[in-house]
Image (cartoon, rainbow, N blue to C red):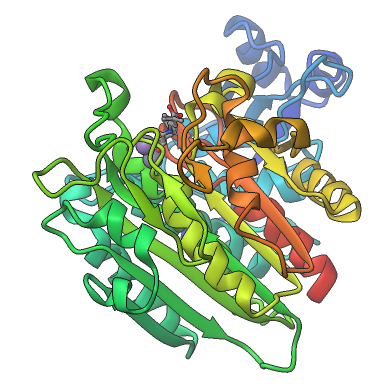
Length: 460
Ligand code: BES
Ligand code: MN
Ligand code: ZN
């Protein structure tokens, strides 16, 4: 069970009563006269996010009131309860009445308990929740544990999370579930025909590699996950300005989320043959760095002209996708922090996803809504595919102009997928720029929860 939960508290759990502006007067009537007077004196009226601890006769906390949005509100945040761990004093609490969605509120409580504590005392919240009746607390713990993994990997700075450390984290995860682990490093990438992964990563003192692990019954349907593992993205020689480079430790967010997703899949023993591929590289600047207008032959055979060394994510994914595609998986999924354009289009909280499988698109959109892990479909707009044409090679990695940058990136990747039955690509952000309930500032588990829900429905 996740550490935010306490199933057998020593003292009775303190009740949390959820209140909205419209239920407040009714709930106030159920309080004792002094408690009601205390709430009134404190100006509590059920405003969303407002909270109040009511004392008992000894001055201990008798109960907590917490304001939620009215269901009729224009926007109602199902993760509102994720603010509670950061507000409440140490102790064990329980839900006295139902928040709008008990399952999501319980998950939010666990997600909101996260603090990144690797480098100093993280002052992690000490408020615990007694699991509400009827929620599958093992499942919620599994999901929250996966989010912790993704967040820790992303939040760890690049000096401690290079290609080797990322591979080590993947290896540990694989070992925990008895998966077969392989890693191809440095010059072996060239020997194994993974030239784009090598080209992007060769300028770093920390050797590039391809992480590859497989788990599950080989007779089950093949599902392959590919995650962008750029451990730091300077932009290469087309160097990023410092403001854009600042948070590029998070450029392995796709890899982190693929590992989080793999953790949930393996822990829940979904009936799939899972394969995880993570190209892990550092996009560094050095004398041997790849250059603008260099041309490399990709694994798939197509030659790629480098329009911009900062469009490195699609390069490393291209070789990994081509490799994945060779075994014709039933479902091929890639996640990566690929474009600034996706943020311009939809902002940090709503990653675009791409697929030509209509049924899959509906399932992804529904799972995203149900899990409060928002995703929004954008089109693989075929007319823009011509923008990727190069005058001297099969394809250019960075079309000039920059229109529809997330779409053209998706179209670039699509050129490397042909045999998989279905392909899903998500251009994630993997980062919460400023804290919200259940979403502490920093690395974020994004798309993994929604995709896990979808896979559970299909292969549970
Ligand atoms: N890692 C970046 C994308 C990114 C930037 C994600 C900022 C989140 C925040 C990626 O490698 C990149 O640099 N993409 C370029 C592509 C361009 C050169 C075609 C971009 O988006 O500017
Ligand atoms: Mn880049
Ligand atoms: Zn990048």
